[in-house]
Image (cartoon, rainbow, N blue to C red; front, side):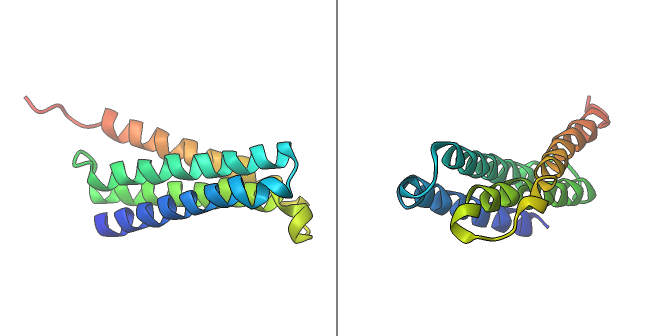
Length: 130
């Protein structure tokens, strides 16, 4: 599981950098300032959570089940939160019907909050080593 988490973190970090550069250069010419800011929020949260997964994949205090739950909450959160923002921000370019994605963004945020909350709970419940 650790290898899967670390590989996923690497892919998410890599794509966040690529999307960030794409937004800063190619999209800057075709998106409004508000759309570009939204796109950048998606990139930022994707990168934050790629780093979070790197931490989770190497954090020895969590057991396999706890890592698994945090991994899937985080990955789902990134897909729903950042993914919906990317599609909504570039809607005028892609001409996709994306209005239905509006509720996906807060659902993704809830998954991300749940991942952090579950990590907190998991650590809180650990018995101290004396």
